[in-house]
Picture 1 (spheres, rainbow, N blue to C red):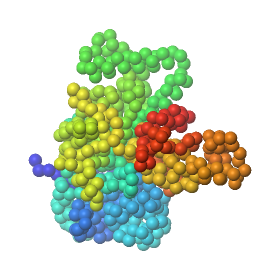
Picture 2 (picture 1 turned 180 degrees about the horizontal axis):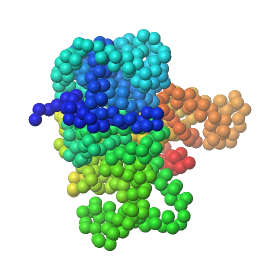
Picture 3 (picture 1 turned 90 degrees about the vertical axis):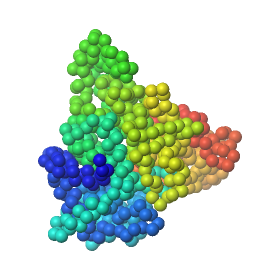
Length: 605
């Protein structure tokens, strides 16, 4: 069978499922269905509008993979998906941007991707682009998805305006020509990932990467046009982009859009999706909500809940061990389902959930065990942007708690001598845009070096045991380069050292040490007396001083990069203390271990 691009698959999907629901969006309190036919027609109209706007770029000698680029900046909505697929249909690529990015970060991505058109969600995001527009000379138009374009002059137009341009006659043949010319090996989208130093790198994913990955996943996740996903995580993240756009196109399931992050719990209950993907922080919130409700319940209900958990734990353990379930236990399981599991699933909005998936960051085993005991088996997926999202997956018929499952079909995993996980398969990326040296560091002879250390058990299950790189992955699934933030904190005149904490945590915090001479001078000038440095750094006025500077630095960072809490340590990091190497580089692992109690206290409140 001839390999197809995601655009060709989309066209076929539109023909086959024309009247079936493709997308769902809530408007004026009512969910509106968008059919595959309407979806397809609107993508074509927008693609023709892009062509009318001059969405074309000659070959780029410095980056031969690059095509005309559309940058996307907005929360999940039909217009985002339409613009995304339209750009690909017109022969181009897309460069998604996090909605929490600063104007300067948006500018970098738009310029690096050489995007000529930027599609933004609303006035808030429009303002970011207009603030830096003079530094983006290649940008021809800014398109506002919510159709409110009240500022910016001629360079700004609405989504509706682009559709109107596409309605003009004479462009269908040109669009069809471009679609026919799109090749599987051609670049489709960029995924900007945070590095430990410097600006983000742009992961290049081809049409082949995308279609190969979605087809491989279909072998372990059986979904079709009868299934539906709730879309709410950032579409600039590889997981949501693959699920909401490419996975839906390849595997035919519908996508419903949350009204906002705050409305996700409400929208979950309304949609009751069959496919639900969440980062660890979401599952942690569900866990907290359930436990709070249980604590406030009468004693009898609490006992029933604990009994149901015990039954669920024993049942699922036998399932995972491939052991038969005794008749008595199976009977209890059925009763527990009627009394507890079914009601709880429905209350969370997961009553129809076939696949409850967790990824983008490691999740605590205790959380997994909790949901398994309530007959809500969470299937963990492991991977990274550089391999199109998934490397391995805990399939329904092969789950092992503590592991991240087995490699998805077609993916090879091997361990280097130091235990680093290396990956090969059709999902492995083309490389980093305009960064051959960085590509060559981790893509060697077709093997992607993940930066994670792991092990594989006798049954082929993969376990992540450590991280080689310093990159933090928050509980919300955001990749954060700590060194950039630490560098910002160390520009505060009173600060000597800073260590950013946040891996698997719900927010970033920091351990800060002060320059003794500078802070003592400041104390003298402000009439503060103290008996020791420890007493000085704990003084309320010192705390206020550093807080003001941290707040100032936070304004320069994206929301997920901001420091929410910090502790000022009494002593500085040193070689003798073990926190620094002889070349004065911070030993992050040592700092985390040495100050474990201090760090835990930051997250205990």
